[in-house]
Length: 404
Picture 1: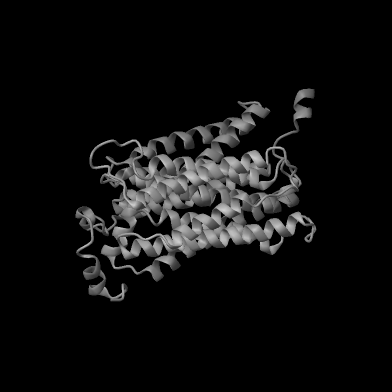
Picture 2: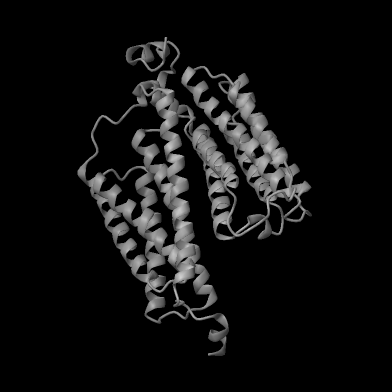
């Protein structure tokens, strides 16, 4: 029976679903006006204005402080509306206090620099930018906490598996965005690194493999109920292969020049993708989502091998703008990370209970991937435009400060 047929969808899984499957569904109560206002204001403040202010700071643009104050105002009011909503006993609300401290610290440093209360030294400059980058990262963490809390995910005895999917998927997605920003802002990325890009990709691969090895299926649990199935072994050994393969890639590229490329990470991507394509789950929807993840990894590996071969052979001459085919690994790396995050156990049960078919889910996650890439492309282009068009530098050069 086809999975996208309303009643048949639930009947197909009724005898296979775990006992806690009934808890994963859309919230019974609609979203309140305070929560809607909170989400809108925090989106404008944290996702639009504050990142633009951070880009202005990186470009040393003179109107950065105005954008910082506007973003801080929207974000602060948004946090207050979140507390008005009343649901404070959850990880998302508690994390809001940490976000508030970051916001107050960043805004206070900006105001003190503008009023001349703090000298525009290199340390103050680095501290301000560091808080801005940290706030940008933790905004994403807060968004993950908000979605999982609202949908009731990662809260019923499978926290390790949920953390594993979100941590590894986020690692892939963030790595793709760093690669994207590096290509667009730094020119030909391989010429701006002391080592080939595969060295840094192998470090990320080691980290993702380490997380997957020890969190996917409660590796350290020793109770009698912790019996391992073939799925447990497959997931764990995928983490082991990424850990070992990443270590191999690091050692092989440790002394390489930026032009001396390797296909080690690409081969691991392809091998993992094939294993996920043929990997079978108890639920049909779970098998479909793992297939999507595996297909994205195979495309990532193939496109990465093509990029390495073309760039390392000298067939493509390096220039300021990256070639169009260099964006393909970025796209598939981001897509594979999003598919991995979306294939955790709790989300699968939520999809089944909500009668969302795999095609709709794949299109949704692909759209999210395109929006994320578009967002970082716009921030990168804004930085380049401000660096070229702004004749005024916000801070004096360090040599002038030393002379004074």
